[in-house]
Image (cartoon, rainbow, N blue to C red; front, top):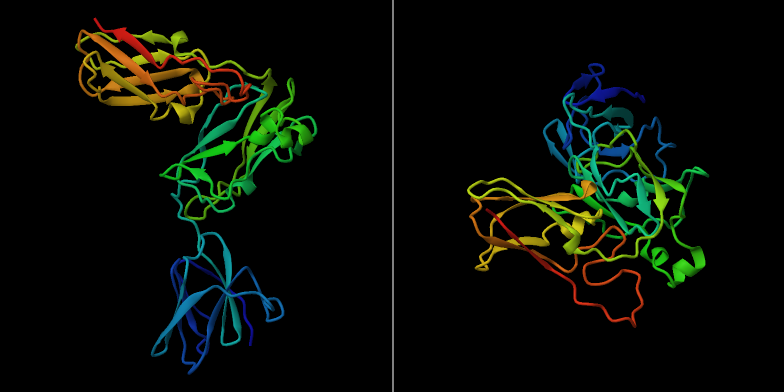
Length: 346
């Protein structure tokens, strides 16, 4: 006797008085049966007979028996909204664990940079997700599309073996193939640069990319931009403009950048001190897409002079940092960069 029935999360089904009872959760399958000896096997997918599961590997798990109750515990929890087939006593049963009605689906919260025009020597993007993402094969879901041909650009993005994710799993770094973006390297000579000036491209993240619980985004994310001339100018903090707060307030210091700088390199690379070299505690808010950084102090500003100190590794979206150009003449001597700006609060 071979039967197939769809069963749902935390539901129990009894097919007939001779058939076993099944109950399911993400972490276990329980079977109540009077069969003296039997084995539970679980397969990912929907199958109706032994021919269909021939040569397929069953899910790894542990089987425990207490009286007439058999329990199968998978090594990893069952994925939500995925079909599985249980084989028990030569009978086949399909089940699927539904998604909670109030579950918040993964989405892209922000992208840096997201300007409508980006330089042809763009080096990387940062994708901020609404929740932690699953790092497994993550780059298989991210593409650069040539809008003229509507085809994927080969070797455009660097598929790292270990994805560059923040500690909380929400911020992903995507590198545009550096070997193609930097002149005179082998990939650049053989394949040319990734982005052609004047052309239009779309960064696509497909809806199959999953969150840390294995639930996909379901809808694609697309960002379309046009390519401008290469940026081969170093950023210079002397060109930044400050909106100064008043003394005896906790209002934010607003720093207007003269360029769209690299989001990641700005993070944790700015500090504020007073003229006695005392570190001023506070929070930096990076809004690189709008060419702006804000510093909110924990304590009130005093009427005195302060110093903004910058790490030399702060760079623009083409990889040019405060110390040197990304794509440079290595024989040319670099000038010492400006790494500090003073400002007075009144």
